[in-house]
Length: 297
Image 1: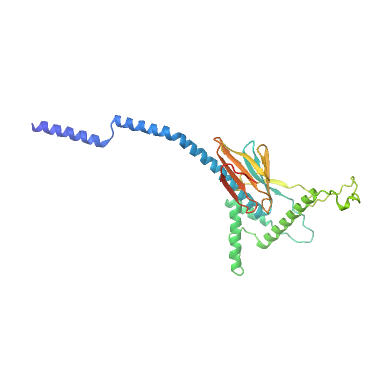
Image 2: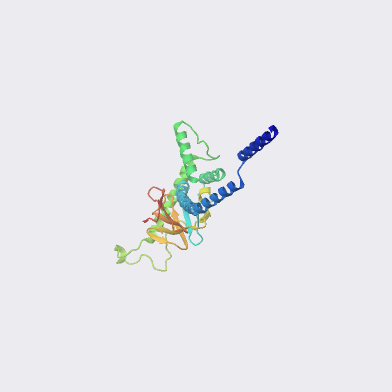
């Protein structure tokens, strides 16, 4: 009797331990079935969220790209062109490098190109144009606060005075180019000189040109301005410049050292028809993002 009772107690204890040690096959089957039902219900909503996140990410990247392009043109006093290939759905930036004027004889040795020193430093450090501009401003403020102070963190051979002079020269050349282009577009219609007649015969090859050579295009390799191919399922539907929308071909947005000359808008859309509107603001040099398809211009 005692042995039988002990055997029953051992079997009961073993079943109790087995119960605590895991689940039965039926319980596991029920749990897996419930998980499958929940996944089937949640997956369509999860796909929508992922698609919307990709759309928002592309819109935010386009906004940041605009700010970086404006900072690049302003910092290096160079014309920057952002090109949008709406057929291939990619965009990239190039800078227009105009030939430097030849120095006259007897002017002595010219200082190195300070902007080139900064450009190499940025490439080696991986900083953006905006980061480098902030670093240079902070170094100048620190140097101004201490007599005889030097610019910390600048590359070897960098001369702040020479940099200011070179940047001023570049800006002056840019201003002359703008005046030249505007002069070419002026049309004399019913003016004071109409009664006198043309000052030059048609065969005379007179023209106003300050820069005979065409600028060289160099694609920017800055980390924030690298070529971008949009995510599949997301596209730039239109680029709006001065109220005129373009939705095919290649569209160019030109940035001068003064920034944008007009408001630039973009409609970014996904396959589900969700929209974001991105605006590059010429007044502030910043960018704005709006949910949905908003009016631009």
